[in-house]
Image 1: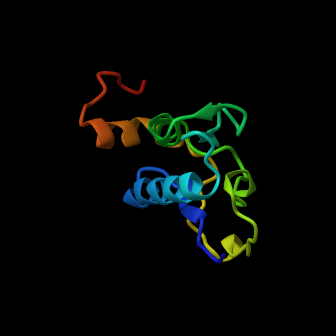
Image 2: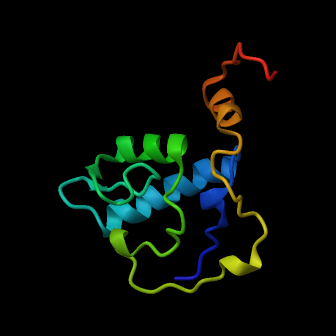
Length: 114
């Protein structure tokens, strides 16, 4: 399956929201057991089974665990790594977490940078 997965590590982008939805559709169609999958977020690291809603929340808040481009844990059997040709990959998925949360939940922080 050839698919651009650079969105997995981009921050503050509608493409991330769409990509997470696409990942969830794939994972729950191909790697689900009893309506749950292993959560690939940075915290769970494919070690804890969770519901679709929980996995979605974890991925949007925490991001994917580093380097999880080949979704073998979620039913993928073949993979072509075309990620090297994309320059959208962020080095740090948390580089603008506050902005992502502001966009998602429409609130503004009262903190100031000093």
